[in-house]
Image (cartoon, rainbow, N blue to C red; front, side, top):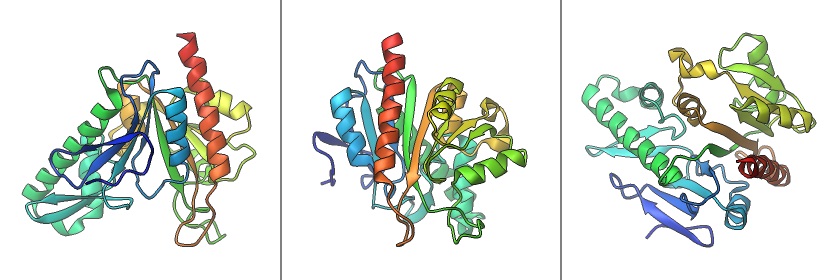
Length: 275
């Protein structure tokens, strides 16, 4: 029996491994052309609010679940292989996350190959659930990050911050083409693929990052993330990201992330009404 946290939700069990499942709110065959996805189970500050908005406004919200942790554990031939579920949407990304998180199996090519195939099956399971009969025009990811970033000289941890993205852009990072620092905390930001979305976020005072569409063609920038996959497929992608408490450090920026979700829905409804 799977644990469901939202009202009016249902569970879809991953056929290849029954302890992995998707909690689904709404319908992937709704007339609304958007799908929300939370890949990391421990990043859940605004998930309840997103679920409520999906019920009110339409679309689908999918949360990947297993054991409440950030990473997913694959059971392969009685061995455990962990992967980052936001690094499984391309072949390059799958092999990279397996290598990074499981260095002990580097010399076991059969196990690595089986793990990559299982991760591929999981990515397909997620994408099918987000898509329904037709893929959505827009995929919205819901993430949380830690306070600051490692090396910021303020005891920050992690690697997500609008200040860090600014530094990356200045240093010539190929996966970025623009960064806007707005009026909000450095950890509360959007990461998008659509220039019009970026410009509206920027003009409204939000922190926003615009991905370079060339990531779809540069193998070195293929990290297997949903944003890269979206670029490859031509989907509009919006990541709604805000700070959370991490091991007692930082704060849950629920109020801000709720406002970010509202702003995202305004963009989505504006686009939906125009079609």
